[in-house]
Length: 247
Image 1 (tube, helix red, strand yellow):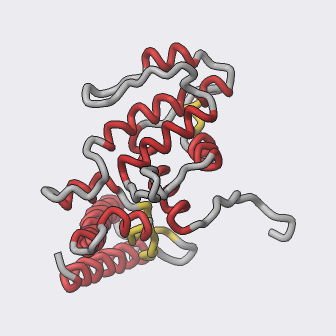
Image 2: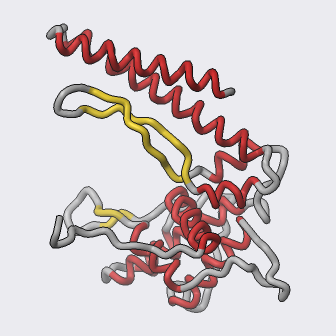
């Protein structure tokens, strides 16, 4: 993929959106508008794939692909949204997918240790157990029955959901992804209890049924851990979002 090809795909999307707006203004049949919406969805998918590929190529050719990817944190994407007047193309970003980047960079190994993405499953399991305990659920049942793939590491800790154990768990996971010796055999990228709290507070979401919470899976843990390592690298801090008095 190259920049010119990506620009051509962007232009194609703009044309598709223009056709949609024209069809709506002309009160075209529902089937016509529906067909154009499907075409736009395909154009968005194609363009976003091209945008990510361009970023991956740059990262693959850099001196430290994994470090640079995490430092960058986000890749560009586009979305098509409806406004009061018409449909428009909107610029956006998403957190970079380290698993996809690693696959793109093969046969080169860009992580510190192979198999790190499978370790994410057990991290998800133990974070979910802690969250389940905090809401009064049966966390021991979750530990025994949380589905893991055959390649995942199921660990047995004496106190698997304590703050200290979860901090150690997350540190071990980070060490597999990105490691720089601090001169004492330890990782310069050090996890804190705040990083664990960030994951615990953001990994879960409301379940479909009342009074239920959907627990995280490996993909979510990888996404959040990418943000954790970025915070450590940049020296940044987490922020809470809420409506302020002046809003």
